[in-house]
Image (cartoon, rainbow, N blue to C red; front, top):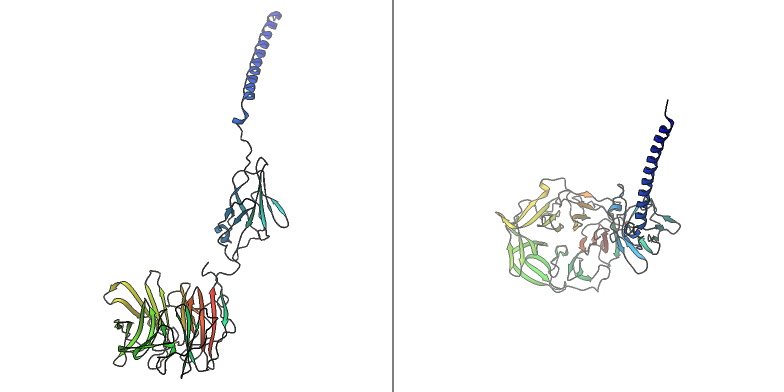
Length: 464
């Protein structure tokens, strides 16, 4: 039988023990609460920022639109409305109808929104928006709600196709005889047009291809001058006939200089030298240079057929930095229409053959069409070929041929990107000059007409 007084005493002791434990926990809890209440709030929390500022802006990457991620935006701070803009326009065709903007703020704002002409969008960081609706403003409110900053966002996209050539007629031409020939060269910043009707010569000058000065009559050139063989070094004009080279510093007054060799034709001005084709003992040719001291034979002696008239020349620099030139097509001395492409190269480190070497590309690629009366320019690191006729005197039409491998192979230009205007008639013997990233085409002739009109073409992206 249980002793009741003893049992109650034991229960009382247990209860007292539990009570004492709870009292201890309560005292500890109160103690820490007092400590926490006594702490300085400013030492454990950050006051809301008063900064309302944008540090950077961009668009999220989209694989189908590389122009988005490549765009670099400048954040320009101003006293009033800031400006966000991209100096280099995004690629043509970049679609801004559904893009995801990205913002880097100087401090976390309490609110930020984009204001479009027809709506306001509170930013979440995952917004897909139409950035074609302008003007667009970004509003930033500081975390403490005391400051607000507004930026105008101006994303720009190229509005024209960079691969598109634009052509325009800039001069209607003079009234010239139907069977006349003409040549345009550059001299002292002007375009100089020399026209021959077989009996007399006329000279015209223009600073821009659109405005031409009065007709002038040159003196000192021989009868039967073939104006298509006049070349220029930029300051002096040159023409050759038999053992005489004629020079002019104004296109009007020409001075005759006898030379030691018979000159078949002027070739080109290349590598800061005037080049001519000389002839000895009938068919033996040799290239030579000409300066104040006379002719200097180069040692370059073409063994195959070489053009003497109606050829095209082009000068350019290879990717390795070597000066190169090419003489394309033309008529041989026996009247044959040629498909030759004579390639000239200069090296600062002479080979056993010398500093200059020459080879004929068409030997390995005979599919190149025979052509005369063409013109070629070096433009945008490629060759562009205009006009001309084949060995049957059939006109090549208005198509432009392009070579991206320095004249080895040629293809037709994409007519949707590079096509001469409809009013441009197919022709030959036109002059072509590149100036200030523009291509100028001067005159030419077809079966019935000699033209003196001027067309100007330009690749949209050539100077972007």
